[in-house]
Image (cartoon, rainbow, N blue to C red):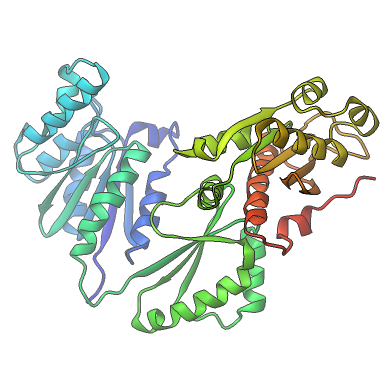
Length: 432
């Protein structure tokens, strides 16, 4: 039996004018691909009732699954519920479950449940509600002409939660049993797509065609997906996943089980397991490493303090960096970053630290220390390691990479990993 035909209908004047970039359909395609389904057709239309009714009618007759995205809000240009009701010749009525959701949503925010909000509870009669944890507009679904129609909000994080937690499980439950979909997702740091593809081509040239290898570029983590839709591929996948893991080495962070974890989360989990505390001493990143740590719930158990010492004076005042080191070697130097690391450990009584000092640009570089130069020092009070890198990126990207590298170096230190990561091999810098 063949896989169900899936179509997407995206609505909104903002999409047609380019005021909003369509990222939702790409995300939906990825999520559907994880269960072995592709998108057969995608249509984007403006907020026009006649156009919406026409497209819904046609797409419901030519697909098994239709996902409509957008048009569920409280304003006059949100037309999805009305258009669907007309297309399937169903009445609109106030849905009690949607009304309860709206009432609770407004009460929790101290907002008034007014007429425009109430519009979001007027839905096609007998539709099934899809709960929205993150917003005021519930989703809903109907079955019409042998087609399952799912209506979803346009806000990306609302859509994603709804898809992953409710719509995809519902679709998966109805897939034919003979259709096999097995997906493994791996997190990688320190290897770009082209570098990774080159390594695979050279070291795993016989990669089986029954296992689809896909890449999703991200900042800072790269995601690699192994997907198979055949029994033969499923039988081979564990073998080839091990081969791939061997090739990736210590650049492999983890296999994603549910929601991907950040580099900070992975590090904090390790520290929790060993009851260790971490601190930071940051100059060029301006507290970005500390920010990434504190974004993780419960991080205060292992992270009590970080130091942002942007000026030379504050490096001395807060971290006891000797002024003569700053004068002799400059703020961006091995000697100073080591002193920052030691100072942060003494001041915080933490077990391990990461210290960074660099030239984020666009100004401030010299021939000896060009823009993008960064010194890092990490480790414990009696074992501080150092590295100088050249990361020739624009300021914000430079800061993001330095923060990510700092977290990864701490991960490697905590796991006693001695192999040299690719980013040090490629970006190692010796001052002139």
